[in-house]
Image (cartoon, rainbow, N blue to C red):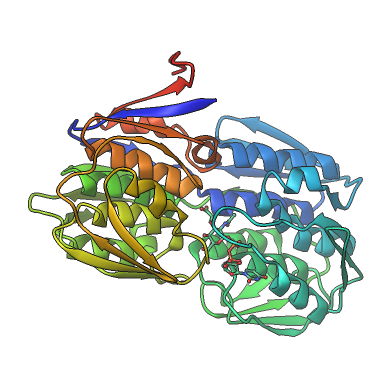
Length: 422
Ligand code: EPZ
C-alpha cells in the first residue's frame, strides 16, 4: 500500500497549473453516450476516476481512446444498458450514465451507488425526477432499473443536487417535449455539461441558474469539447499557498468559479491577485479565524471544507464551520486532531480553535479532499506526516505529489514497506 510522506516546514511558493474538472469530465464522458459517433474531450485529467468511467463506457459498448489529456468516446454501437455493481461500487459517480442511457436507449440498469465515508449518497431525487419524465423506475436487488421513453415535464428538486440535475438533463435532451428542472444545481460543471450538450444539438436554456429549460430534440451528434478547469483542484493549491505564506500562483481555471472561497481567503488575511485564468495567493500576517458554511454553488463548496478546516486549525482564534451538504463530512476532523488540531464537532457544526502549530503524525485520508487536506497540514506541521489511504487522492488529483514538489514541498510517495515509489 502506498503512502505520502511530508516533511513539514519547507517554504511553499511557485506556480501550478490545474487540469480539467473531475466533476465535469466524468459527466461529459457519460453525455457522449447520447450520440452515435466519436466524441473528443480535451483537457481531461489523468486520474483514476476517469479510467474507471472509461471502463463503464467500454462495458456499455463504447470504445474509449486516450492520448494524454485528450479522450475519445466512440458511442456508435451500445451493446448493453447495464452499469454493473462491481463498477459502480468502485465509483459512485458511474450513476451519471443513468440519464444518458435513458436518453439514448430508453433503458438503464444501474447499480445503486451505496454510501461512502462522507455520506449516504442517496439517489431518490434522480429516481423521482425520472418518474416525472414518464420513465418507469424500479429499484430492486441493489439496482435502479429504468425503462421507457422520457417525455417533457416540470421537475422540482427538493435540493439542488448536482447528480440529479445532470441525470435529468441527460434524460430530457432527447425527450418528447419541454422539461423544466426547477431548484436545479448551478455548479460550473453543470454549465459545462449543458454547453457540451448544446454543442451536440440539444436545446437548453438557463444552465447555471436555478431553472433550466430543455426542449427535446430528435437526435444529437458527437462533438469536440474541452473540459472546464477544475475549481476544486485550484482551490486546493490556493489553500497550500495560504497555509504557508506563498506566493503561489494557480493557473488553468476561472477565478469567478471560486468567488466566495477567494473572499474567505482574503478575510483570513491572504493577499490575492486575480487574473482571467489564474490567482496568486500570499500571506504575510497571521491567519485570521473565519466562519464558513458549505452550500450548493455559489455557496462555499463542501469539497473545500476540509481544506479550509486545515487552514483554520492554525488560525489566530476560534472559527465555526457548518457543513450543510454531506452528513458525514466532518470525519476528516478526527484525523487532523491527531496532528494537534483542536476541533469539536456538534452535528453540522465544527468549532475550531487555532493552535500555534500542528505536529506531524501518521494519518489516514477519509476521502479525496480530506486526504489532500492532511497532506497540506503536513506541509506546515512540525516533523513528519505519513498519509495513508492515498488511493482516494489519486481519484481526483493528477500529479498531486509532483505539483506540491514543484512548489518546494518536501513530499514523496512511498510503499509502506519504506521503498520510495516516486
Ligand atoms: C457531486 O456529488 C460531486 N461529485 C461531489 O464531489 C460534490 O461534493 C457534490 O456534487 C456537491 O457539490 C461528482 O460530481 C462526481 P449532490 P453528488 O447530488 O452529485 C443528497 C468530490 O470530492 N442527495 O449534490 O453526489 C446527497 O446525499 C465529490 O469531488 C439526496 O439526498 O452531490 C448529499 O448529501 C465528493 N438525494 C447532497 O444531496 C439525491 O437524489 C448533495 O448531493 C441526490 C443527492
